[in-house]
Length: 614
Image (tube, rainbow, N blue to C red; front, side):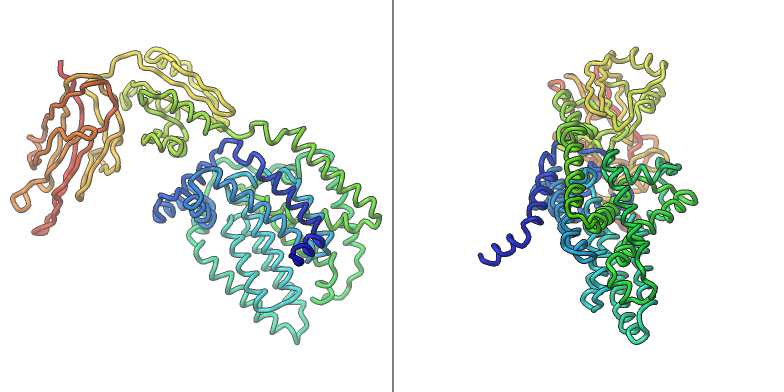
């Protein structure tokens, strides 16, 4: 109890800052809807997904390493699969990064510098925003700060233990987000520079410890090898070149995007460099440079901030643009430290207090009043829009979206995936007869407005009526009701079955025991025939037996029979009755796969359609 009391007395300012940081990051943490990137996170961290499926999706659709998704997946499994769980992880990660920046400020300069840096980061809106988002950017901030903290400790007090710790956190920084690669490169150059200026008698011992750090880093980077290869070939297609004001805009964004704050930060930056330029350090020795807090902090900032900027510009112009403000969020702690050191260098304590107070008051005013951050909508309301569609879609009409794969996350409870097509393409598919003119919902957003040609509008008006128009923040939806009765025969095309075992001719294949299930379709009360054209492969029976097929409609089996290998005799009609208007699925089950006499029994389905009896 005495130790706790003593700790509180010695660190009451730090605890107050962490308490404020906790409030600013936990308050309304799940108020905003999740946007496109966060939906990616929720899909890829689904606790019911196998690690193989997760790995495939990450490598196919992501530019972020596996570590973040594995952590969130584990938390979702323990505390419940929800956006709240994912965002709370980000919030607590953000709070932890406040404490780490305090430690780094204390290591680079003094305890008061650490407290000032922690306070500046606490009230930074950019840091708060990404502490409430289910993505890995705030995890990158945490591990980047930890990597530099352990790097500073290692360079000042070289030991095997400190070398290993640096290697661990440098690797974790990379695994949090691959955009830290340039910063990691800068850290390595700083270590090599310090190695070069070591006294000859100490250089060998320091080199051995560098090898320990490098080996630790290398071994922990190996799991990210496949991601490195993938990202090296990545072409975004949507990022643009930074332009003449690109980086000033980014720095403004991550430091608060407020003119008065920007002015104060600019003055502090100039003051820091004036003090740096006044340093009379002529000896190029490790001890002299590392013991001078101003020069050592400048070396840290160089490889943290200034080293990555020119390389980013060069890569953007020569290869692929990579200029996006959130890709530089890991520089935010460095800027906070730079400003904090500049404030600490002011000799007048009253001026220090006034400047810190101004920054805090202006930041909080911007958060709560100017931007109304906690109550003003700022993210596309897909969560709310899809809830409205589900509530208004009792008849189970198909849902289509240009973000179909992502929107399927919200419709998972209904068991129906969302078809991924742009509205213009879906209309053209109906015109060409590739898609039936049945009632459907279309939803979109994320700066994608409703936009059709007059010809497409005329086609929709001729064949559909708009039953619902939903408009929420940066999202919209339309419910199109077909004006005509359902066309028969009703073709169930191969691409409407799961799994999509389709050959080059558009036929469905079953190579082993298992089933194919169609998408849902609606049928009115009445008498029907399910018409199947299929063959057993090979044409000759194996062990005097062809492929056996079971056919179900919904949960009811409507027939089972042995196919044959005769291409001219491969159609069968299975009668069934619908007793009330319903939505159902067709299912085909292959149950006698075998391999004998060097032959493999398979099953091919050429077409499936439903006829309505008169």
